[in-house]
Length: 452
Image (cartoon, rainbow, N blue to C red; front, side, top):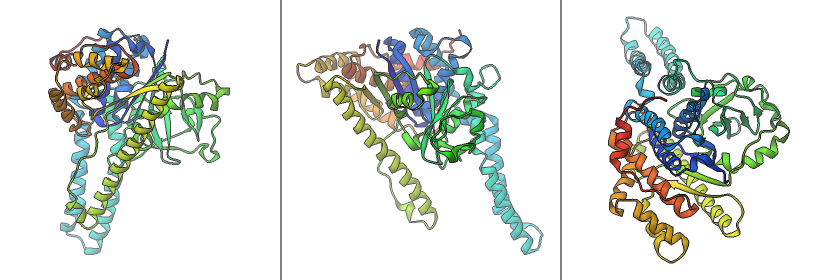
């Protein structure tokens, strides 16, 4: 029986729902039973962490869920993300933003109207700036608290990472800024090349997810003690006892594929500690990173502010181009594996693809790929023009952690499902399935399902 590694990319709630749509296809097709690991970064980690939590406490894990059972779980998660949101769904977030705005207004404007001597007002201004900077540094903690309240405290108590040790390794990826490498959090282990192989300890699940989603500029890096994880056999002496300083996992690898690709090396690297990682035969990469659009640059002319905006633009370019190069290299490796009959096979479910156009590209000819492509076209239900509208709608969803319109969320779920079915059936001969209608996914979002 083949083993499958799934990788879920970053991209806020867009990535959470698009990835969930692809997982719905894997469950419906019966392929979920072959999944041995799900790795994720940023928005994909919301979905991955939630599924790991569902398997805790004796409940059924993803690889063993019947399609109807997984649909109930997916419905609860999708409704929470789309209809309620995460970061902006708690009063604490709004109180924090209001407090930040009031303190900022008081420091920047109010202090100059106080009946104090000029030098006292100057001192008060700089003290206020320090207070404002400290308050701003709490953004990550506020985000973590919101994730805990909305997704990761099902019984009123935050779920711990060591409570989600399951047969499927749900791997949450964050980037350590000391050496620019991933730290992998799972219910069975925490590991990093420099720190070594460690234990989950008492780390709450929502902290790992928040660290995985700490987008630079949006959230400050998350500092975590390394002592709680009892790391062994690390390759960096300076890392012993040093705290981990974590940013968004997408800074290192925004598709999350490096976990599956490096599983064999980790087994060799920590063989004495018996990591027992199952090396997947196939990898399914679900990439919800929207391509960069043409944008005006007039704001870059502004003094000082323009330089900051240019730096943010530089960051986006690095993300986009780094991911593009990695995708091209993966596709080339998949083709070589197919040709020579050895190596990891796989496919990329890419959000900016039109499933009908993709199938049409393979449909000409008389080989097996063409036959499967024509079959996939019959099951997509909509024509290429309709799917092009769906593609554009998916890629235009912003990278955010707010609620969204029902039709927007249903479109992401369906697009992820359709692209997964088309790509995986054509390239890997996964089971062909008729793509459910948009109304089916809208109903999944609208109807409250009972917890088993």
